Image (cartoon, rainbow, N blue to C red; front, side):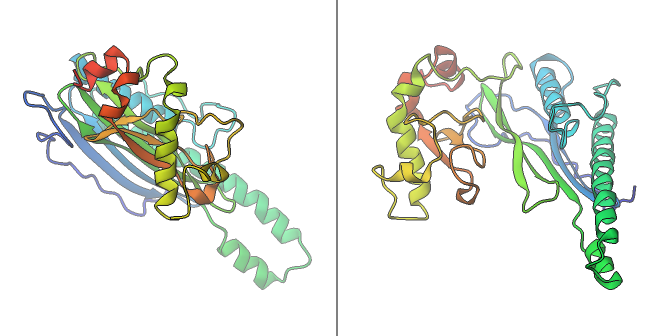
Length: 297
């Protein structure tokens, strides 16, 4: 394995919370790590913001972040959900050891897969009589490697919750790469646990007008001919119901942000539909736990 470039960014301790922080809120102190590595047929970029605490609720958030990192990097390109390397079983309080393990194993695994693909395609090219030796050499020289850009960083914090953003880019050959990850991940700072219970039962059906408005605003930003009356022409849905996104909506200063992944409700060319619904509009559909977490009482 060769390293194209390697650097660690030890960010200033996050004594000032990102986004809006209620008075009296104790920020989750964290540190940032960033790397860019390459091997013979693969490139890996790595950006992680990891809480410093190893005990208490903040320590549980730290463990949750490590679990997300494991779920992303240990399954790169695993279409059948097969783990490609073991979970780290050392001292989780040693951040450098944890991070070095995952970034190193991820690049090794990615490069092994890319090299296997390269060698297979090389065989086809070298056996093809329709190409000259010069053309074969040019094709092999320009053959693209695999790429994985891993990112898991803090994006918003209040007295009660902290939100991390898990958004990766992966390219494993083919026409184009794609965005993966778990999207925005919200942690309850009192319990240290991941929070997903935002909506009451039946809220999806009751929120259709809000979701339709949000989707319309997204598409009309680039095309002023889009309206509520024709926006469904841009959607790939099996029914009239607009679903919640697979990614859990994320708290922001202005409301909950809804982001759909590529192909989830629209064509790849349409990007990742995203919009924010104000808290005042959402409150009737939120669970008591969500209202408490979001300080909407």
